[in-house]
Image 1 (cartoon, chains in turn orange, green, yellow):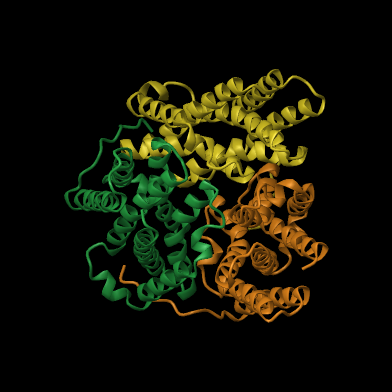
Image 2 (cartoon, rainbow over the protein chains, first blue to last red):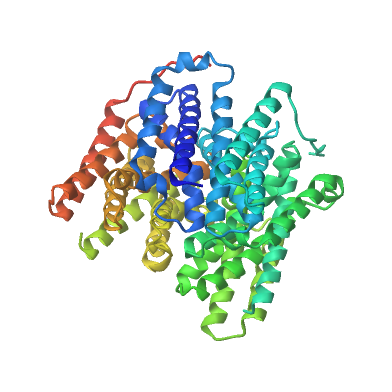
Length: 205
Length: 205
Length: 205
């Protein structure tokens, strides 16, 4: 994938996750700075974990100041325009789903660039996609969305799989990434709307 | 330690922790994929953290697809055979203890291979042993077992110490690792059965 | 900054955070080893994260046994002298604030040494400062202090900013670091005493 294309996708995902973090922060009655911290953490934790595990240190989110600037912009919007944002249906889940899809394909693509095999690339794609949401939810003392129903990690899996399959078939990278991201986001939306979910085991406890 | 021996121990620990993660997930009423995510997270978080801190990136759990396959197998067993597993006394604690012992000796051994000193190797052994359980418990919103009583981290300490002491005395690595792992697992079992524990301070709050 | 000066500051921060971790552990009725684990985790998580993200592996806290020794000493004091410590007003918050200021300036300084730009260095300074407290609070199932009010991360920001500004102006590093740490600690103390805080958004949920 070309550098500019990857960066554009990464910035979009950063913005989406930062909005989700800021929204979670305002709902928890954090102050302005706590909201900005949560916006930044949600926006960058997935990519920072990805880069740390690939040995691509220091992580791009700490090297390129634009990740910080985008997170702060989204955090300020999330703080000062909270009412407008809450008028959307499930703004936290929508922005989270968009970030999930974008980061899953970016993570899988970067893992392939660093020489990981298909299984490792899919796993790192999922980890990049779900990492920001996990940190956001753990910091605000919620059970992470990833562990709940409605095909959350499955959607990230589908997005990452499409990227890895496209790579194996030598398809052009950018359109494949767009297809993967859209598939992930649509699948997650449909699961939320229609209540699609996987089976649950009956626990004895 | 020979590569094959280390890998065999590592796979066993991966299976044990994955069972503990899957059991925790079913108890929390997660869906199939959430259970698989928790199985994989519990099984690989300790080793991934170990490799990231040693600079051994990308972590072996993302490079070698067998870690993924073993986690999934254990996760599926944990999901579809939950009732059979719960017939054991404390299946979560048993599988957790086995993983703890195996990962503590693997972590300490790998740290020595990477040139860490004895104190660092013991600490990294403990961290490798307890890391998977911490991630599993934090993700499912439980107080981590490591912070509770009954000699949990002490057992990991004993296992890692035996490996480091054996290395200092130039004893053969594989039998030393087995002794360390068995000592850790037995100590943890006895503490669970007999209620052995360390003193607790009285807090004023 | 000279090696000896940095190390002295780092040891002080390690001691302060370890006391905060031990105090949190005793309040949660952990046993002796759980208290020591929490002391070590609070004391080293910020620096370990910093080193992992800079690619400075293995982290200095695992290489240099004195970090371990200082954490254990502070943990034992926190365990066996808990009553004396609780006679201070807010001992957890005081020790946490001292560690925050010292680690924020160390983190920012080390990031500059590794070639990060000003924005990255400030972010890594904040991360180093708040990392130990986040791990301590998440492990003991509290909402992290960093997300609460009273200018917590703002104080770390100020400390890190002073170090980065001093570097940009070519001021001598050691006095700048002292000024940054003192500014951070004083700001955090004043915010705690006087209830200074940033605005909070009204959430609709």
